[in-house]
Image (cartoon, rainbow, N blue to C red; front, side, top):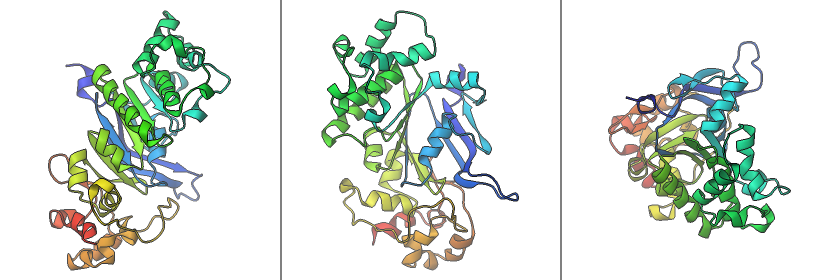
Length: 340
């Protein structure tokens, strides 16, 4: 059995990433705090959460752009090598696609130069022109040669995003980390880019980690969904499991604002996550509707919610949630928010 089939393509184990220098033994601000997450070959995983939840910092850590102070990133089961040669090797196999294609492309460089850059950085031998043309074609820009001499300002937003994707594909990566890949695009174009990612998975066996605040995107594209809040994963499972029967009140609140959910939107109390002010116990309890409406009190766990931190615990079928309600009664966590 090959190594690729034994281990995930990329994996975080107990990953902790902080900002700022420790003071008198106190660790830095915990932007990512003990995260476990993996992406398998040919799998699309969505990582969702509000701004400030830590999802972009986690993505940067998985790429080796941000070094953790605890835990590990593993590539095919091997700990990440943070020396320059090790990181360069990783970044040939794992590519980043940013949300703003306009900012990602140099306005003074042609499409050909933008896509060929990776080949030149990594000194990939072979027919450069043919490889660039192949990558552009895979990204849906055909005939590829027609785009070689164009500049970013001559392209539509969707075409610019396809150029960025081609720049990743040119190195034949096994995994793409896409940070809000359609957030800056018109609604009419978003579906095309998501369909492209699905076709690349089918044709190339490509793995994708999609970082997003939009659970609707996860609904349309992801095999698995991980929901992040204040530096930790609070729920993870097959996308249809998590979205159909959410087990964490935070997930339920995020789902409630989706038009296709058919629910009354839940407005969370308090402020958005702030990693410099992490509450005791469950990090979500100050904003939790189940605490506010008395559901947690009636279940006899309100005190534990305020004082007992909880890791993600297994439920069934690979579904996991970091919520006491989900472990004292099936479906209570979802009912706590959907009934509001």
